[in-house]
Each structure stands twice: as structure tokens, then as C-alpha cells.
Image (tube, rainbow, N blue to C red):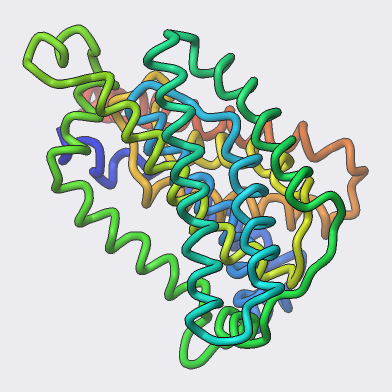
Length: 319
């Protein structure tokens, strides 16, 4: 099951879209492919990548978390609040650690609410998003604060390769390791067929709670790169990022019904979505075209595997 989940076949269509978008960007704006532009592009998309990775983990278990944007916001404002008193490297690391733990704890609460109260994940996490957003506003009522220069310089340095690319490579490496664990095997089993997973002795409830906790933890890590990118705190910044995270995992080949998908494909999906939006921007199209463009991209990603199978069948029939 892990092999099928992480197989390149899962996200081949998204790789095709990535190549097409790169060619299109090279035509409409060749300067975008410069080293500095690519570095800035990857760095600005790191928060969405982390949210989308967290979302993928939840969706593999046939769930969904619409509160990850609010969790990202809450983690980031907690970090910025604690960083205001941080004067040493250990205190800075402590502030970041607390923010990440807040993200993980929020995700665990989501999982507990869903499994114990037995609410639909869409409804439960949508409701929880208001709670996390409200707490974020209570902690940090208005945009402001300052991120230490040490953190800014770390994230914005681009020695040899862009910093964002190093982070992406690290995510893929961690995912390869995690995908070999029993947790992911049980999560995929629960997402593929919950009844069968339960019959085989898997604690489905515990696995799903853990998946929400891991998603929150990953999102909390993403908040580090968010505050390092914008250099301040904002109690309303996370909400617009939740839809792109879902779009990205669909583009990357993750099945919304659970049981199949890949974090690598999701990362490709985030890059594709970002490039596609750049194309729309450079073509100087009206802003209300963006939702249409996102929808068109989703349709292409969903239709890709079916079209590929049909073409393959035609080739075999002719042969």
C-alpha cells in the first residue's frame, strides 16, 4: 500500500502540469526564472507547502482539516509574541518551539473532537477554525511585532541553492522515512477502508487523532517560515491559505476519499499552483479570473489520470 501511495504514477499528471507551467512562465516572463526570483518564489510558498503537507496527511486517512489556516495563524502570533521578549538564541528557539507545539496541540484537539463527538471532519474543523482564529486575535489583536534578524537572515540566505529548495528536499526526506512507519500504513488502511482496517485490529480512532496532531505540528513548523518571510505577525493571515492547500493536494494526485496520495506530489501541486497564478498575473487578466483558473487547473489534474488510461487502452487496442 505504501508503494502504491508513494508511486510516481500518483503524481505524473502534476509533473506534466509543472513542465507546462514552467514553459509558459518562460514565455510570458523569462526573468521569473532567474536565481533570485526562483528563490523568492520558493520561500514565499513554504507556508502553503507546509499546510498542504499537513492537509495531505489528514486526507490520506479520509479526513480533512479546514482549520489549518487558523492554526498557522495561531502558531505564528504565539511565536511573534514570545519573540518580543527573546534576546538570545535559546530564547528564540524556545519561542519557535512553543509555537510549533501550539500547532500540534490544536491539531490534536481537532482529532479528538472529530473522533469522540463523531462530527463530520468538514463541519468540525470548519467550526474549530473560528475558535483558533478567535484565540489568535485575543493573543495578537492587530498586525505588528518584529522577527529577529537572525531568523530573517537564515531563511532569506541562498548559498549554493535557494533556501526554500533545501527545505523542500528535507520535507521529501522526512516523508520517505515516515512513509515506512506503521503509522502511515495504518493511516492508509483507515483511509482506504475504515471497516476493514478496524477488523484487522487497527485502532482507527487513535490513528486519525494522531494524523490531525501531526498535521497541526507540520503547520506549526510552517508558521516559522511564514513569520520569517513577512517579518511580522498578522492575526488574519492564515485563512486565505486553506483553499490553495486543498487545491495543491488534488493537483498532486492525492485522492480526497483517502487511502492514496503523496506528499511529494502535493509539493509539486503547490509549485504548479503558484506558477499558474504567476501566469495569470503576468497576462494582466482581471483578478476575478483567478478562481476560474484554479478550477480549471483542478479539472485538468483530476481528468489527467483518466485521460492517460484511455490513451493507454487505445494504444494497446491498436497494437
